[in-house]
Image (tube, rainbow, N blue to C red; front, side, top):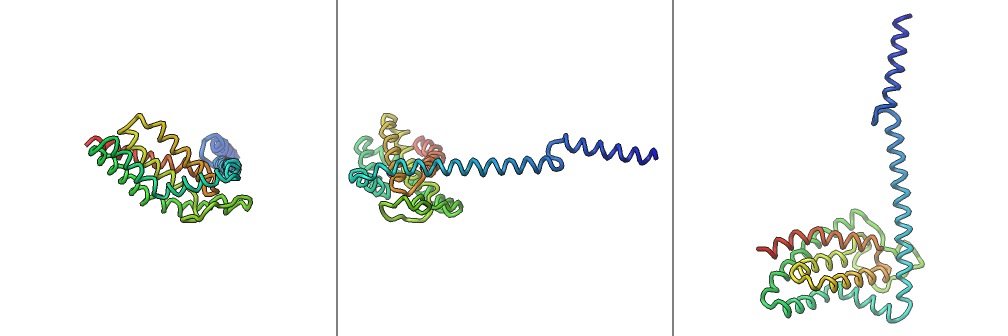
Length: 215
């Protein structure tokens, strides 16, 4: 009887200890379940807010000037903008512009090697594909929206320009905002796509540009 009581008491103590020790037994499973539920709920709310923002910005293209501006800015972001920026840099720096342009080109090249794989892995459909109330102003290069390649490329190119020419920071910020607006208003991207693309471009471009401009 004494041995049985000791075993029972020992078992009870182990159960109580298991309840108190983090990461042991059912409580950890419950915590994991709560975290998963909280993450799913937060993700759903963020996606809903993203879509509301797309609808808000899409109102600006109801008028012809808005549609034309969004299309022109987006098309410039396909590549035409960058020779224009190169000419401006040459006009300001002369021969010294070569280092800035090479840094910008290196950033753009590396980013374009990375982001297609990220897009395919995440596989987020574009806003106009998920909501019938939205329409695309023009054709798309691929079916995935996250992250924004336009915002990523522009961010990566502007970083060495701003490092070499700090006075143009406000102009660079305006270009980023305009590109972000155009991509959202055209129904091709969510705001989070733009933010992620810009962040990815900056994170990769800043250390590379700082190194390239210092040698």
